[in-house]
Length: 282
Image (cartoon, rainbow, N blue to C red; front, side):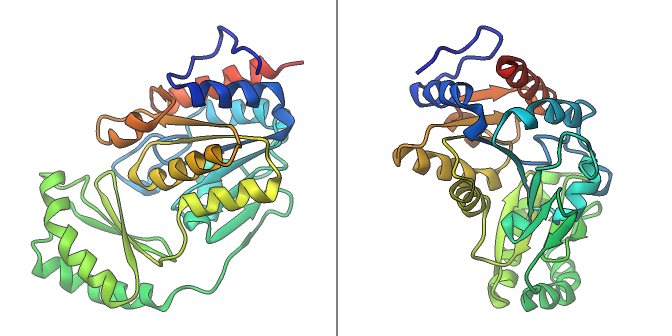
């Protein structure tokens, strides 16, 4: 396996170094997959105001033509991630794929369309009951609900004590989700109630198999990305080289503990994507 240029950070694990070397050796067979919030876009108090880091699209434009494919895998609706990312109609990103709602939705830049199944009926039932559940369980000022179409997210980041509000709602929201056939996906000061059966790991593994990739890099920042990390670890055990990148956060340490590379949030991800494009420049 080839060496890693000095311009790139050196993974701390042998598997990560092997994965990065394989990606550089045959970039045309590599999949680069990225979370959105906290990875390509900074975390902000109001999720509707999240936007990709200013350097994200330019870095992706430089990298995408040099690799097999680039995919954004997010819990957001695919169309929302496309708008907030500024991905639509960008020269150089004609083959970008956005897998939204943990892979339940798919947007392809070539068609500009979102493909999605019918919504789970439990989401509407949860939405109807949620105000009463929050009121009965000490819904604190600053706690707010985000309607994601195929999921409902309860955010506590703007509460006076975000962590206390988060912990107080864990059990009642789990019970509510279970009554309606949903699961709860915890994140950085957010509890998301969504349908089961799909996660970022399933989405990533299916996409990697579909693309016929010879190597994969995945970057994420939150608990929902642990499933994608596990998928890369499984792919590595099956013989497919891979690299795990943590977009660093002091709020979530589990990813950093398992990552091959830790970078400094979205600016660090942008720097890594740019350095990869430079290293692959013919």
